[in-house]
Length: 124
Image (cartoon, rainbow, N blue to C red):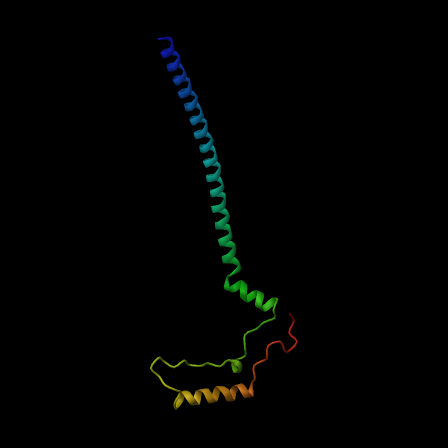
């Protein structure tokens, strides 16, 4: 009977120690999970701020402002703009009116040539 009681006492002690260890591990895991969730919330806030910053940097008005001020760019003069029509999928080579438009555009380009890249001494 004494051996049985000692065996039961050992089993109860082992079970109690296992329960304590398991509870400690669960609390530790919960604390780590809370810390990671906090980090996740911080990263979500940072992601939102980065998206807002990206949309600000990519705004058309800002790009145009930088192009004008830093790169000294300006819109082309009306004589420098050439409109080219793309023929439809069933259309063949340019005929009649389209050919005349291309010839007029080429002639206008000869009269008012577009500036070449890297030339003109523009400030970079």
